Image (cartoon, rainbow, N blue to C red):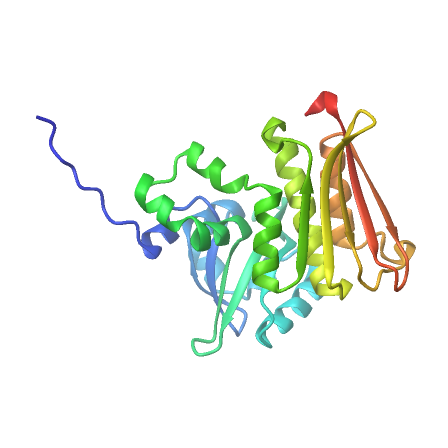
Length: 270
């Protein structure tokens, strides 16, 4: 007879410690209050080193100003959704991190976690409880590679901004690398639309066209001057992601006429 071994309950506390994703709690004074082991491993500093100086100490010099601006918005009650910035590790390497942050004024705490971890806590916690105590690689893949259709629905529900998804291509046919980069580019576009575009409607389309796979994101926002903003971190990140999968990113935008962003990828690398 096989003994019935009871596994410990998966709580938020032990999930905080066991998840491979970076999770932290920060005080509004700019210092960490609590970090998990993943933060230590990623940045290479010891926990005391990370806790003893302001968080801004570890942010890349070129990203300090706009990070401080977004943090001030967070403290005024505007949640930080899929925010990306660079940190410098103890070894001197530069790493990109993507954060979702929520401010709890009653605790004067910023609860920060990677974007896909936020999705786990909101949408998949029951699935995690029922299937695994420690997330296996297969389980993490299930969570991290959510579909664009799912993300567009979540984006609409959370932010109250209409986001319509139209897809004539089976996303399951994409390689994990292509799927992940398209997903992150879509996230970047939608966050920019939300925070800067002043749009009321966004449309995301993924389809085959002329031997290419194309993801096209259009909005009815205020538009922007491409030449003035081409070196902005968000646009640079999107171009880098597109290039990493041998794709091409094109942007068309006019003041008061919205924005159209297209990522084209050759089908031979899917």
